[in-house]
Amino acid sequence: MAFFTDAAHKEINYEKVKKTTLSFFTHLFLAAVSLSCIFPLWWAFTSSLKTQQTVFNDLSLFPKVPQWGNYIEAWTKANFGLYFLNSLLYTTTVVLGVILIASMAAYAFSRLQFWGKNFLFLLLISTMMIPIPGSFIALYVLLNKLHLVDTRIGYILPQINGGLALGIFLLKTFFDDLPKELEDSARIDGCGRLRVYWHIALPLARPAIAVLAIFNILAVWNEYLLAMLVLSNKSLMPLQRGLMVFQGAHITQYPLLMAGIVITVLPVLVIYLLLQKHIIKGITAGAVKG
Amino acid sequence: MNLQKIRKVLGNYIFVLPALSLFCTFSLYPFFKVFQLSITNWDGISPAMTYVGAANFKDLFLDNPVFWLSMRNAFYVTFLALTLQNFLALGLALLCDRDIKGGNIYRVIFYLPPVLSGIVVGLIWNWIYDGNYGLLNHFLNFIGLGDLSRAWLSDSKTALFAVAVIHMWKGFGWGFVILLAGLQSIPRELYEAARVDGANSWVVFKSITAPLMIPVFILVSILTILGTMQIFDIIIATTGGGPGYHTEVPITRIVTTMISSSKFGYACAMGVVFGLVLLAISMVQIRVSKMMRQV
Image 1: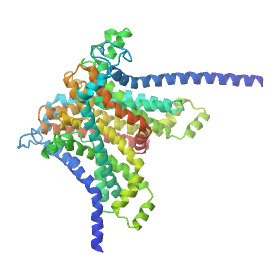
Image 2: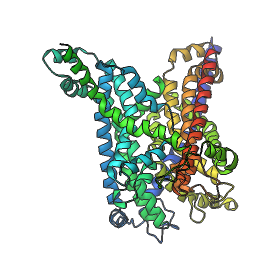
Image 3: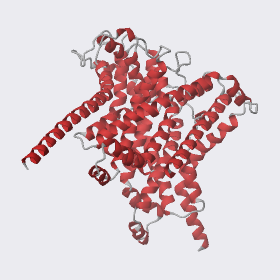
């Protein structure tokens, strides 16, 4: 009897040691990978606070005399303030446009009857499946024809279109799962289709709209290719394009370039940290279900 | 009555009209226009364009080694992303799937690079790789491997791999999050039952986790392939395709052909061929996935 308890006791201890060691190395590895994710960003930030003279040799993680003035210079002289406001304008417009247009269409596909419904739905979401890597050439040609090259509207409209497929798909699925009773009773009270959509369906769809908004905010804020093709006037450029222009013109002004990067990244970082649960839920729900 | 019904149905179309008109203008029209332009020699400016039949395609297949080199480069990066990046993502996901402390913090951190833009990531890594002041060289000097230091992005031996590392750094967190969600959807009872039967970790992974994860594996690999083949922003922000053509990828080739050489027709032909390659890859993937599900 004593022998058995003793053996069992030893067994447990051995297991425990093994578990703690394993857990220690697991965390060590995960922490190392985490560090590799954060360090480049921190390095960009800390470099943005050094001077042009010290930036190449001062390897400290935080400079002794942080040059916050770099940000003022980046914001005004290097035009990053202008680019920032442009990015803000584009992102807001595109996201509002996508939400409005996609939710209207999604509502119709989910609730209303009209001829060719299924065909039109498949047509609209087909762009999610088929990559056409050359179509930006034809898009540029089209914008040129419509005199929309180097205009804000020429940069905004294609991006609203770009967000529609995912938006319609996401919101239609959401509306499909929504009980119809509320809308029915509103209709009996004499509400028209548009009012039912606007006052009842749309507010109910808030969670799905939030996911859609986050994805489009990130996509538009980070967009580069279209900005490169369509916008050559500095006063119209968003941040990503502005960064490339700045680096092309002043390749060695690292502190200012890094300040521009921080200005570009900071809003994304704030949104991400505030809404990371929804973002991660959004990508995983779509991926694991689909 | 009948008229009212017709009006009602027409009214329903108003809901889809904005979406449909944007879609037709900015998706459908460019889609067909690409095919039309691909058989012309249009320069993008002159009002006249001549139809040249299959000449663009013939030249592309027979006389354009740089385009195929760019394709090869993209395949190389894609191969690395499929193997290194996804294995790292899977390994991390398996570690975090155990109930470890702080799992959520790791998830938040790993998904940080994927929310950044390719431009920002490229510009930051430019400096890490810099030949004179780069962090990587400083680090190599520090640990006594200074001989290895070089200008990583302008050395033809290392440029493509260096770019691939940036791409994988930006991408692994995305794979990690999806794979982890897949792992967490596996019922815990299955693991417990296997443990009771005395199965070790490898057997559990091989006979429970892996088979149930096949759909997720396939999804992650399709999206990794399609995403990596179309890599562009990181290249533009770092090497611009150089040195020489060592980091050229299909999209940079298409953009250069279009903007710098004003060969719009030819660029469209490149787009069509590249699109067909991507389509073929996803078809093969879907076919393979069906076969694996039957087994």
